Length: 72
Image (cartoon, rainbow, N blue to C red):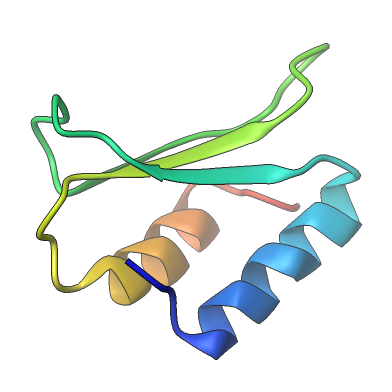
């Protein structure tokens, strides 16, 4: 599912601020609509997974990213 351009820009900003890439992918095994794992310590990448068919991915990405401190 393509992300809204504003969300893509936010992801680029997170990558710029954190110095680590954000990997975005569908996950059919996910029990919730979306989940973020922030790169901490020596972890090289942030992960954003979302359940296929989730229509509000853009809202979840922007809301959850700020909530979890991604890029801070």
